[in-house]
Length: 315
Ligand code: SF4
Image 1 (cartoon, helix red, strand yellow):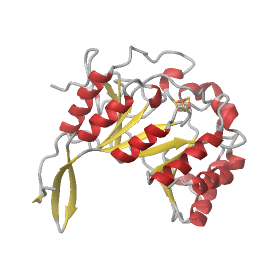
Image 2 (cartoon, protein in one colour):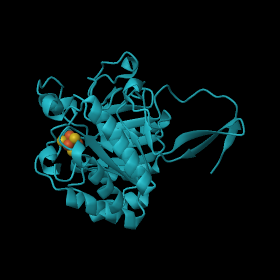
Image 3 (tube, helix red, strand yellow):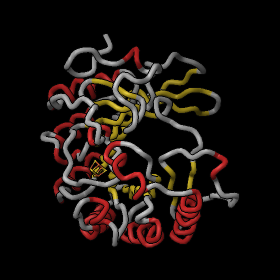
């Protein structure tokens, strides 16, 4: 690995370090809480034809040129995207500049981007798992409850997801369990987190239900009140301590809502990292927020929104 030291250097671009790639609008679940904007009941989100593999390859290459060093493949359900394996293989061959500080200097080196795959696990296969191991892809699987899993997802089964955590663990793949917490599953949150960690999940990513997408039609059924939000945090911290693992809350929380108890295992963010920590790429456009914002809605990223119907092109 070639490394060069420096005390200051212009960044490759002003883009955040993580791009969330929405490969497809399609999904094989129908989650009540789904925040994908194209599933919103008002139907106003523009669903244009999906980009194909060739355009996605060009977009990935461009993102890497611009210094984006974390690529998260998602959807909808990314496993439904034709050519996903090819895109993972391609991304793993790209080179991007990674920067860190050491002894008061910035240290730069070229390496492939870090790859993440976010799935509901329903279409997961052993060969894809082995591909994740070979390419060092970190895998995140969603588990919105145990007894309430079918109700949340429109008929899914949590057991196969737990089985994939076990297989991934045996293969040495890094995994995260993603749990969206709602009024329906808060009472089984302890058991849900524990089941995932016992099955082999390395980390927890907790998301409290927020209005968006299909969830807009289910606000009364799913929204947490203040007591439930605080219970969610305390329960997660308790399980993580027992299991000697770590986790984080993906949806920011106002500081005034946090319980006074210290959180040692659960990182609870109080600021939104959309457009600062990550941004979303879908159908040749960028947007700052993973799910809630509409394309071109952000003044922060308006200048880099892609014009036309092709892959990302900031030239
Ligand atoms: S939350 Fe994820 S798994 Fe559920 S319907 Fe939406 S995209 Fe699919």
